[in-house]
Image 1: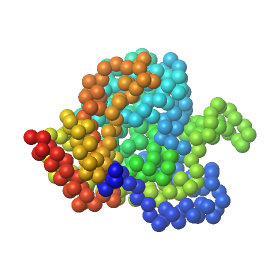
Image 2: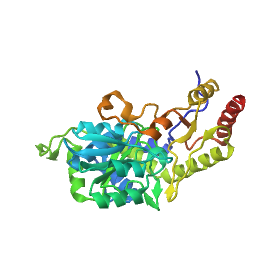
Image 3: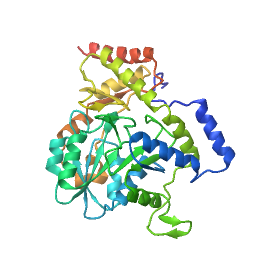
Image 4: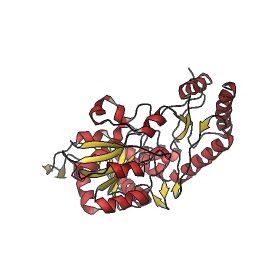
Length: 361
């Protein structure tokens, strides 16, 4: 079936194409000056001192755990309402995941987090889901009290803020993804780990490049997680537009909020938080029927995520009931949102959603 209004669509400019051609002309494709500039500019934008470009957001989380010496016997708390990459690196380093519920912001439920912290808790991965940050006042207070290390999963929160501070500026290490659907992309897989700790920065650099300190000198076991110069060139150009694109997403969300009616729960922007709407997520009791209705009208929608991580087969031994997560997973639906989405298209999406619920009366 043809899709008239896609769920997401990256913005590609002539400057991005020119930047790629410059890299091709240079014949320098890895470990070059373009990546160094992108790492510097992106980490500065986020409020951190150092950036390490890597092959994906998943790699950024995995390398963060490695750099922080998380290992077998350690417990890492992570929300279950997320893509599996928020938790799979925990198993990859041999640690034990403990899943925490979410609240109405779709981010960590602080009350449940307090119950889940134990003497074995060595790290928390806070996932800033759909473009909105966690309650960082509460999380940082708990970090101070219990002494765990903090990894921010910012894969969906480029430019999001809490009390005016950018996503990525709170964690010991913070992880970003530049997958094509994100608020900014490298037009393929790519990610970055950022930190303000010089020691962690040096470890991250070694870990992303076979554990080497010199061309043929390797001090720690690792593999190749490097980002290419071409990816960095695209990322550098995308970064120049990030604030503009985030503002456009907020405008689109505002229109959705004004025009949508019916039996749905619209996303809310919580106190002290600047939402950048990586996804515009509604909740509806008859989600699957609505999704099918939109598809018949050539409008894309999707579910992020239909099976929470703690209910995935690979995590079955770590599963425990998470009331909100399990309820939300049955109701959430992502509607189209990207900077190039036109007002008439937003109006058409809203018209179809509203018509569907009118027909249900």
